[in-house]
Image (cartoon, each protein chain N blue to C red):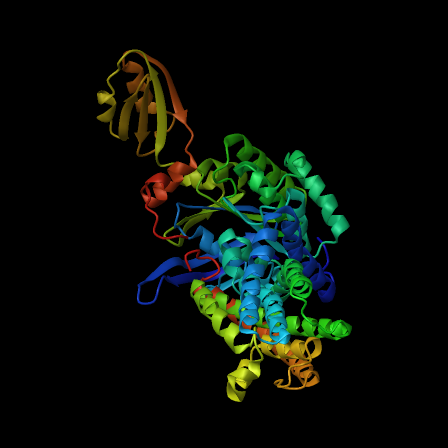
Length: 323
Length: 274
């Protein structure tokens, strides 16, 4: 059985009476098998959150059908809700006067866990995410990172079969984000679980996801493993030359396949439009330049894949609407 | 992966869990005693003083005290149930409630139970203050009957609160204004501080669409039996309140489901500005 399947899912929003409609999603076809860590990569407003809301039964598509674990999100949402969970970055849910442990217990009850079982899981999960010492701290005293760890624990308490993570590391410091990521991988591999992650952090998607989709302006542009996507962007090659002194990259710019060559301190960064098998002519040209200390081919990144598909970098793209 | 608990057990779990923050919150914020109990008492005392200055019978002072107690429950219904979803949405709780397998009816019942904890203290404070300071001639032997009437009235009131909360899912923050505008007319039509028959039979019957009207009238009859002009015999009023409760709960269930779907269609659960 597929964990998630969407068939031409689209979503239109009408902001207010009399205002024009905003298209958040269009023709989204996705199939995510069970046990996969799947990422949706795109800028703010790309439609990532809209898709997560549809799959987590909070929003209905205006076109198409969506299924999670075989349940139709429109008609079988009551049963589906037993099997899923979600957490969003910057989430401020709960009640400030409760302690971490009390808040988690409260949410565990909504998912039907027996109190004894819930308390055991809460303690175990707090230990795993390094929040045990804050278990009796009131929510309003938690830092953003601690709160997000608590939200993660909340989402895992019911041991969901499908977990939706909407920018889960948003606003977290590097160390906490790393902890969260490593635990997610561990949790997923320990059972027959599926995670759908939305993020606009390229490195996060690259590190975590088995496959990912690049989404832009509500449309899925491509789906593949991070390696696939990077390979597809591989018609551009990046090289870095370490130089001594003020080396002039001008001769490189006139070389046939070189798209750009820019000096940045002691490095010249070169982007070529097509692969130059084995370095070939370019290596010979670089070798003839004065002051060259090292010449390195850089691996393509998801950023390159994204630029190849959209024509612009993730940070350069405007937000279309609250997605 | 856990198996589903029985629906009733899961429902009761949800009620207790959602009531918990309200009960705990009341204990952890002692200032609520001042704001929720002491301050409202002053308004009730002011009305008693008006009746006393006019030389009204002691029963009328009793009506005010009863009204002061019941008003607390009505406020709880309006602000801590019907309008609560807006606050829950802004905090991100509503999404989690709806995406969980817990039913909204049970969650609202938890809000009602938790809210009634602090509200009962407020109501008890008003009654105790009235009885001790103003020497209101309550019929103390009728308290068990009065308690039964109170519980049935609260069930009907909270049924109305659940139904009203569904309006929020449909109309977003506009519903809050609508609900707020119901406050003062209800105080008038329900006869919170006077025998409702004083409004005239037509207005009294219209007012009895609000469960507090029937509940107040019944309570006045059993606790302050000198009222010679009740709307209906209190036993009938109890029967009507039971029927009202059933109807309100069924309507609320239907309405919550319908409004949840409507909110999912319109995107009101996910767009914070709505």
